[in-house]
Amino acid sequence: MTDVGIGLMGLAALIALISMRVPIGIALIGVSFTGLWTLMGPRVAWGAMGLIPYQFTSSWILSSIPMFLFLGFISYHTNLTRGMFNAARVWMSGVPGGLAIASIFGSAGFAAVSGSSIACSAAMGRIAIPEMMKHKYHPELATGTVAVAGTIGALIPPSIILILYGVIAQVSITDLFLGGVSAGLLTAVGYVLVVLIRVKLNPSLAPERDGNVTMRDKVLALKDTWPLLLIMIGIFGGLFGGVFTPTEAGAVGAFLACIVAIVTGEMTFDRFFLAARETLTTTAALLIIAIGASLLTRFLALSGAGDYLSSGILSVSSNPVLLMIGIVLVYLLIGMFLEPIGAMLLTLPIILPVVDASGWSLLWFGIVLTKLLEIGMITPPIGMNVFVIKSVVGDLVKTSAIFRGVLWFIVADLILVAILCAFPALVLTLPELLG
Image (tube, rainbow, N blue to C red; front, side, top):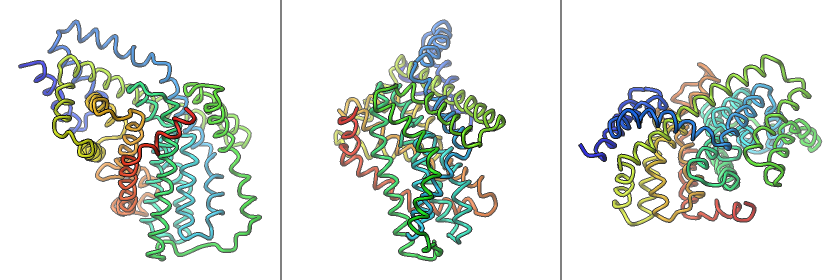
């Protein structure tokens, strides 16, 4: 069997293992190690197992991942996001679907300190859904809105997906963060429009509105937003002001979150320990997957399968529009079955050469890719954000009802992907001005 054949057999084995629910990190490492042994012998395989994990994890930029995760978990467990939602609720009180719109803005605010879609959905689900249900919102609208609003967490910086993509694709993390701001805000606007249109077409989805809120009430509600605003100003002011790097921003943000939580009286030893434990377990899982992806990249490069597949994709069509449509469809399909980081790290060794050969901006593609991966977080059968919301609401709402609730938002997401592909300047302008 040729080296390329061995590489393709390895990919087939990898897909088979993942379909059997073998953890993706273990599957990546196992297939890559076995493939390297077959190609080059045991000495090279064991050498790669010793060298590549060290080379990847020794990247200083990766140290920001546990810090941003810790920042998000601290903010979640100490209820630092509650004031942001309450302020948005008061300001949106007279708007049709105001509570749903408030959950979108609250998610955007939490996204600016968490970097995690799942944490964003869990935090807003615990706060916003009971409030909407109390005001007789339709369960599909209430749960669907919060499930999709959580996906903003991967676009608005800090974003764990963008950090990993930047390390692998060798793209400036700061530029990716700036590009993510535009896409994240456009996503939030798109979701708000969906809520407004749905409630306009069917007012029974959000029947109750509070029209007695005064301007004084709105101003007073803003005072509870200071914990999150202080953290956001500290992170973004220092980051884009050149005071510290994206790597250092995570540590600064985590420190600020701890101080703010202590000042507000929400910090306890149990909450701190829980946030630290979740940070360690999540970081370990991410690094195992990333190490497996690095080993797969080396295996595909040595076998020639990576170049073979990339060339095959490019030969399918010389039309960049058709090529991009094909990539979009592939990621939408993969996103139905794999979690975003695993899907990204699994496919980048093959897709990045295609993007580079097509002359596309790696910065722009990183934002589009992140958007596509986040659509996978809400699509059946394994929409992780949907199941996070299901864990919040319990038996009150069926899983099928939550999936029905996100369908309108998926349509809005696909329209936004088309807009970002048609107008790359929406992503690239801000990094060019401020990067």
